[in-house]
Image: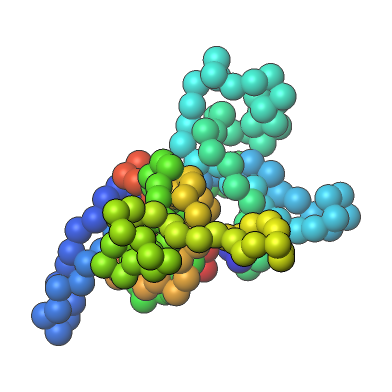
Length: 205
């Protein structure tokens, strides 16, 4: 799907035409520059590579500096590929937030907040001591039994246990664009999206 790169700014709320208070996420979208146009003949598939947020040349590796120089753009901090752009784009073109319109529905992909190593109550919603099983009596938030005896004589893969929580790629689909503010390169999206403030997100039509 075609789309753009953006940065999550935070959350706010706006009033709709019928007076409802709508919670919105504020995203700074673009401007994104075209750093590469991939074609079926040369690359095996058609796509457009976009860059977001300029960075200093001294912080860019030589191969990437040559890549950006070929496109005629300044070094970019973040790159992503999108397929299905309806209009023809060329190297060095700038795509702004005007690419979206109010009441469009978009999919947003981001990296969820990392929560470190968590137990089964927080990570999987186990009941804890209030719904204890297996005769637990003073192990308030323990997982309980994890396997059987001589058969299968192992713990199956995928068993819900304690472990790393968060810091995963998450996509939220069908979020509505409430407002487009082209003078600030900002989108207001109804609802919440994954990631902390300042994190990079992909907005796809």
